[in-house]
Image (tube, rainbow, N blue to C red; front, side, top):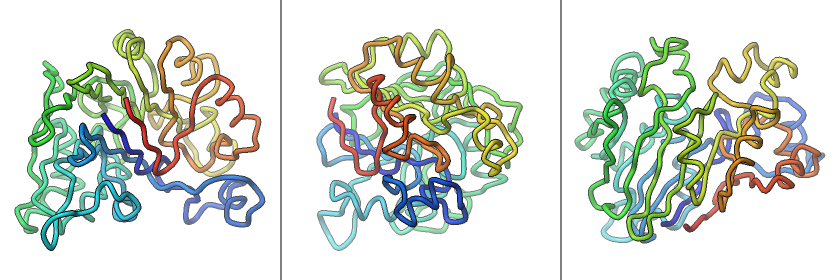
Length: 305
């Protein structure tokens, strides 16, 4: 199975257009060693030809144009993207669906509550009904949670995993989450049985998450913030990362400590906020992550398991 990291930053990207934090300023003026990143989404394929998009970043047009694997190959127009799966209804994971309007219809898999958000308060499905057949909703059952495959990409199996996080600020489920507001994905290569565990937003681990981590070949996990109070301390926000649904990278209950429990072949942080000091490649925090055997995702990263 091939995994392509299309975007590796959290919402706003890096540098964020209106941010003057040390990282964003440093990247712009060349005073820190860092790499620009777009907002997070990935794609997976069993053969390098048929791809499933997981989350649709606002930067999806740029991401596709930078990824030859996704370029159209036949006819005057087309796409190698066979479907999209949404792990939540966050703005930075769904707005890109609007950009894909020229390539509709598109099969979209998400939970009922994510579909509710995206057909009411943020009505992406409704807006695109008039474009070439629109978005075709396929429900991910977050109660019984059966595995599912995407038509045309049957060699990969997706299993939804309920995770602890939060719903978007616009959602009626904000701070009142229910199963299905946020899912992780266990993404299995049927030919080998190996799997990727994709967790771009998680605030707290649990027994099920850790059982899946224990056998994973690769994990792409929430790397949003270094510290829970990072955005407050820097004066760029008023909420803790945990209030927004994110586990910090550092600390006893952070992602690095969690990953250290398991012999996973590839441990990779993704969805990295522009304030996170790990983006500075010469920082102590960046080196700490690498010293613990954890990688830091970059746009265009290719992974094979």
